[in-house]
Length: 275
Figure: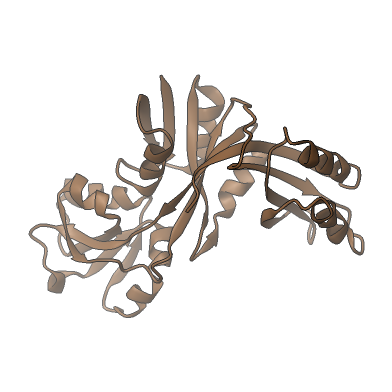
């Protein structure tokens, strides 16, 4: 049986994303940190990880891009999940009694406008949205509300004080599914992800990107990350539509390798939710 590893407690958004990609016949395990996910995928048999890499309101989650580079794992899938944030509290807690609001830093950032409109709330970062509910419930903490999705309210018996408090309704998070299994996916919903480095010389990034433009390959993501210990040098992460099994895409990557100083293929994966 596959073991699905995600960061957080049952009911968190990563748990929901895992259920979209692996709806049944799996064992789900929540861990404390993103690095823990990569460690378990690396060491445990049949382990798959679910890691968020990008939110439509707050941008990329850089730590997970760095971990993709650090660990020898393979991207086999992606899920785009609509994120809904509610202000939740135990049944006996009233809106007027709230003094603190707890949640994961990403959730807090996605609700920035709501929190700015309520300066009377002390904002507290915790390790997870569902984890915030777990802490408040188990420790019977009073005068505290949490920010989390509606599934957390159902799971932990909380009530909704405010609904849809995210700063914009088009709030989506992209999750990657990682594994040691180096399966290469093909077909209409296939995407390929890799990272490369270049010499710092005029026009080099244009030369790299034009390799794909000339072959009419659609680049869907370009992310730069600074190289630690080498100021003002960068690695570039790219996603494109297509698979390494596609002849056109394969030739493009082979051509790219001739002009770059570093290259790591991260996977040709499948998107199960195209929203």
